Length: 378
Image (cartoon, rainbow, N blue to C red):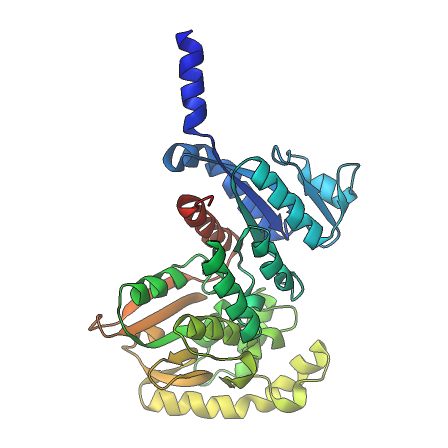
């Protein structure tokens, strides 16, 4: 008798569940996230009093939902679409996950680990189904403002959360730090950062006397850039992150209204990759001028995104910094964000690897844990 008693007792202890579903499960970040959740679930059950259960996985072709939690064959099942897998339909996927969550009287969390433009179109619908949304995908946070505001308002109304720590600086605590500054009543006056691992590496390596194009070539060969380096050099990735930070500070900015200095020479935009790489050296002179001017002033050249909260402006551009400046001391492909605020007399600085599968997955995981901890079923 005592045995059954203790049994029911332990059962009620961990009766809280969190049902998690992942879109982009076949990608590197999705896979790393699933591994991390599975490895940490036991430890979290004792500290959070919640069981984390992965009830759904989807990729671009197929989806799999199991209210008891997907089994270890989920990857193969998604690749081959077995009898219990079905063709992906993200609206239906959300409904099935929401159903599983409400059946388990638990918190339902939809994680978008894709980099797709299409998946964010479903966030609002998913939240209306009662799901929280977590993502490292920048396409929503830097997407159309009306859609962004709509989701934010819906989150307040439905007591659901939209979390996106990993959209800026991967696992680095950048959004959470900014949010905590603002919520505690500090006034953020300026945020400046080196927000692309690729461009960080390129400018940390670039010195006066070295052709800029050869540094790009070297970064490409080492696998630091996208297969088409123009995706990095266009500054678009940095621009999305700047929009997300600016909006967090209350600025009503759209991606296409930013001051964005592209590092891709206009005439080279339309070429194929090989032609682009072959012609890039013809444009080395203008960057060389900047580098030698900087060197003469004992400065270095960096590619920086900035949010000037006071002026209400956001920009991404090449600028020069004194050798004592934190940006000048950056190495490798690290990211760095400098927060200037009223409360912090010298700036608050967050720096470290701002890209990479494991750290990105960790940033996403951290958001999931926050949600599980604060979720109220009402």
